[in-house]
Image 1 (cartoon, rainbow, N blue to C red):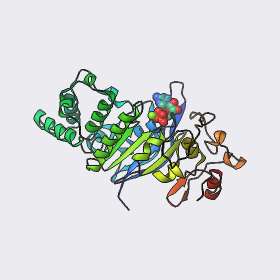
Image 2: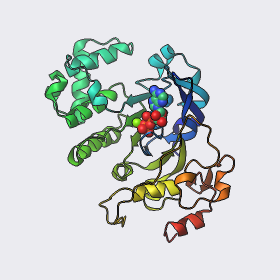
Image 3: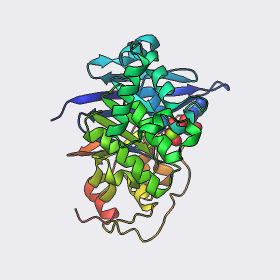
Length: 335
Ligand SMILES: Nc1ncnc2c1ncn2[C@@H]1O[C@H](COP(=O)(O)OP(=O)(O)O)[C@@H](O)[C@H]1O
Ligand SMILES: [Mg+2]
């Protein structure tokens, strides 16, 4: 079994709103990311994926607040660290985060290389401009990014190139884990492919040891993820290998998510495009029973009682009261 780089147990975090409500966007998440794997996190918009990413990085700045749970990165429990300790010891070198729409956060008035220099200095590394340029040049070359990009302003680059540049920059301190939040969203299919290729290259060249790839489009994980965690209404509702989640999902939400997309792969015989009826629950209100109950075709009275425990079927674990055999038969899966 490979080493665990990140271990999260029962994490609960919330937004303290101006109206005085608490929006529990991450509510009891347990998750592991192992060395040498690409872990996908998928779920509809608003289910808490970005909040989970920020929470994993220990970025608790109001309105985001920490409530309970543990986050172990390597051998360090990070929930007890100060922001300063986090910045100097963990962020950037243990774990790095590419935020959603990151390509838009590149400073338009700064050349890429100057942006990189500032990041390196912010992390307290004492390197000269020439050393930084050489480091960046080598890294960009390894990722098939042209050297001229280093001296370019963001406005001179296409959206896809900016995204690939951000990926290159995020890896410059050699983080063990890289979290990429919706790196392919809002890009056309061929640009998506180039971005995925850059992420894979980062991984294959050993610049990062694990990637957590967050997306609302489950199908983009087909060509990159080893394992997938499906998130719904602040919780992980199913975890399994890429094949299990895409081709033999157990949780009715994972199945609905798969059915709601058009997939070109011939293995998935999705002929129709189904939307998932209804809306996710309000995360500011206490939720009793299964969070998917109101939208699930297989709901029974028992689904609405108590907390739904996670159960496991070997590698595949899921949060639903129904038996795996029953779910497989409902989903029309042989076995
Ligand atoms: N600053 C905020 N204040 C209050 N609620 C927020 C804030 N940011 C996000 N949320 C809520 O938290 C939930 C999860 O959001 P988010 O993590 O962005 O989801 P995702 O990344 O899966 O689309 C949503 O219900 C969203 O409305
Ligand atoms: Mg998001």
